[in-house]
Image (cartoon, rainbow, N blue to C red; front, side, top):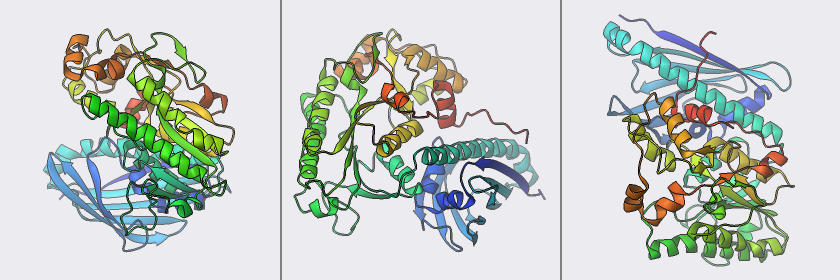
Amino acid sequence: MNASATARYSITLPVSQQAAFDYHARPGALQRLLPPWQNVEIESSDNSLTEGSRVVLRMRVGGLPVRWVAQHTAYDPPNAFEDVQLEGPFEHWHHRHEFTALGEDRCELIDSLTYKIPGGSIGERIGERRIRDQLDQMFAFRQATILGDLQLAAAHPLPSQRIALSGSRGLVGSHLQNLLTVLGHQVRPIVRKASGGDEEEIAVWADDAPLEKLREIDAVIHLAGKPIAAERWSESVKREIRESRVRKTRQLCERLAKLDGEGPRTLLCASATGYYGDRGDELLTEESAAGEGFLAEVAREWEQACQPAVEAGIRVVHLRFGVILSPRDGALPKMLTPTRLGLGGKLGRGDQWWSWIALDDCLGAIYHALARESVQGPVNVVAPTPVRNREFAQTLARVLSRPAVLPAPKTALRLMLGEMADALLLASARVQPARLEQTNYRFRYPALEPALRHLLGRAVVDTSG
């Protein structure tokens, strides 16, 4: 009969033992720490670490659907908590999370695992190395995420904020909500229409009734809008894209202006590097003029729609997002399958500049803008190292250990996507995060390859300890 295996992972964190424990105990922690490259969804959770609380995950193992039911069996704040598998892919699983104080503002987090692979000695021979590699990658991801989040909080000491968030179900919004809650803030989703059952919702666009709820808010983060690349652009789709951004933003800002200074003092509003249009090799900063084309027009009008809030004395930040990298949504998932098949390659000539940013830095930049009173106006939310498209394709292929040999000609892209191909894939925007750098934002992933390795579970893991 095969014996249980063990694993131990430790990291020193730049916060107190209590602060590290609190991070894990708050809603959103589980979501923050799920590896994005794994097909894992939360079916249910008590949002608690207390003894007897349960988490149910849905995943696929060997292509088959599996439910993982875990129960917390020990709860000793701020020293430790434990969980065991009640149902799932292992014959046995026990996980102890232990926090040891190393001083007032340092502690050690130790994750100790005991597990048994099903299938006896055959299962152990076949699966042990693969399971250990997966665990190494998972805990490398968890440790990098925890450390980065706590360093972000330490660099931006911010009293607990009451934050209204639109677009809370989108890629950025859902992850931002988790980050905000694990760092101790309260998030109230802005929705189109009140459900009638959630007192935490604010239905800003319905009528003026939510104004009283907005008076209780410290800051608004507005990310909602029709996805730009969800379908081929027709005139009606372009109209919906424009209206979902410009009209809704103006309505929100007009309502904020009605509060006469009694509500939120900060508004962070989404925008895009599409503001600059197709600019070749020109180096672009927040001071650069707007470009031409549909996306540039939308972004310009989008930012102008915030003027009622500006005139009301609210600090407004325009978040000009570049290509946000996540394996769950956006541009990256569409590139993964062809690259894994060895078909990844440059788009068109491949010399167009792509201004990208890892999801965690996108979230970090938003938090930085929230916390820094000196940040206002346009902010380029991009990494400091834009790359040409051919370099992006080659780097992704290298991370996935695949060739990048099959280019996609411009004509084929235009036949498939129409106008959208030129605006989203073939346009060149060499954008610099000048304002983030001037205000000392610390990037977690300033270079592309480490960012992709972190997101795709291909990090270089030190197992010498």
